[in-house]
Amino acid sequence: MILITGGAGFIGGNFVHHWFERQRASSEPVVVFDKLTYAGNPVTIQKHLDSGLASLVHADIADRDAVRQALVQYRPRAILHFAAESHVDRSIHGPGEFIHTNMVGTFCLLEETRAYWSQLAEVDKAAFRFLHVSTDEVYGSLSDTDPAFSETTAYAPNSPYSASKAGSDHLVRAYHHTYGFPTLTTNCSNNYGPYHFPEKLIPLMILNALEGKPLPVYGDGLNVRDWLYVRDHCEAICQVLEKGRLGETYNVGGKNEVKNIDVVTTICRKLDALRPRAAGRYEDLITYVKDRPGHDRRYAIDPSKIEREIGWRPAETFTSGIDKTVQWFLDNDAWIDSVRSGAYRDWLNTNYQGRVA
Ligand code: NAD
Ligand code: DAU
Image (cartoon, rainbow, N blue to C red; front, top):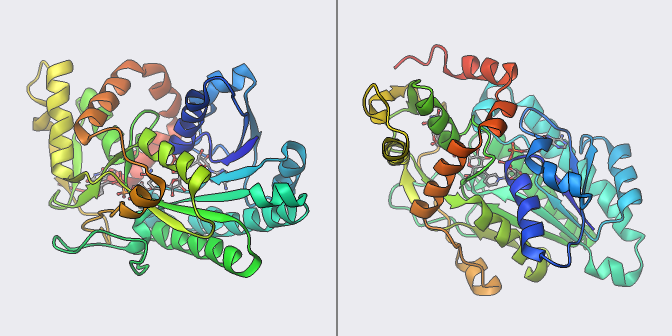
């Protein structure tokens, strides 16, 4: 049994699907430990909850009693720690929740898991793993000519989100160094794919376009992100769990650097082909809006360590991944309706109202 924090979110939910598809016959069960914030949606993993192979504990990772109880009840052999507040724009409007979950929550999880691990029988203790899922944003921002982030790039987080993730990375590192706690850390670039919450660039653009709403591009639209299809990230995590060296960090990325404006026009052209607009081309909806404060210019990952040591490589290109993603959003109205609550509409007002073109 493995315990997955944040397993009802975008990447954690995809991970649950990937875990069961990957194992086929053996099916080691999972327990998802999730606070079910606005970003957590049990519908994403409903079929595995219904099958009985996945269980859900609805609780906060900062609630130490709840974490302790889950560890005692389920006795996992590994923790995969996805739970986080994950949206940069929300961290700018309200950093408090980011400190609570990403830093205090990670600390509580580490403390309770260390206590649990220290009491395991020697053979189980040696096999136990705590895999911390982190981000390339901890390294800060690159210029157009800088080399890509490697595992030895100095940390320079620029937003409350990335600073809180950097803090959690440092705690994980210290628990290995000080207590010999068996940690692994992955720092991944921008993910996209099914079940992506539509506050983030790619799903927001797809859904706004389908509704004929403006497509809000921040600043000059020339910021660069290094895109990885979410299932490739999930496979990297599985392989690091199996083969990673304790205490190490692994950068995960697919060498797919794309400017934001090119991401948006790619989506528009796919939609022109798949679901043409009566009123014109989707690109006509592109609207340049006020930039994100402190907006990181470029992210790029050097994945040579994970390729060399673990043997991981992505299966999807940006072209194949974006095709699958656009098609998924066209085919999954029920899931989309389940996440677009009143709270979601409030967020759109908070972030985009007054961001005049
Ligand atoms: P998400 O926001 O879609 O999901 C986060 C999940 O964590 C949700 O299910 C939410 O309910 C849960 N959660 C939040 N606070 C919690 C708490 N206090 N206790 C328990 N559960 C809580 O995030 P995501 O995009 O799936 O990201 C998952 C992880 O991957 C995060 O740690 C993020 O930093 C990291 N990451 C994300 C990306 C990306 O492009 N999305 C890239 C690299 C790394
Ligand atoms: O790099 C990994 C990170 O990628 C993860 O750690 C974060 O959890 C994840 O949210 C993501 O962060 P970004 O800030 O890069 O993703 P986002 O989708 O919010 O924005 C991608 C780019 O698009 C960024 O340059 C800002 C821009 N953007 C975003 C939105 C929401 C726009 O131009 N318009 C928008 O409306």
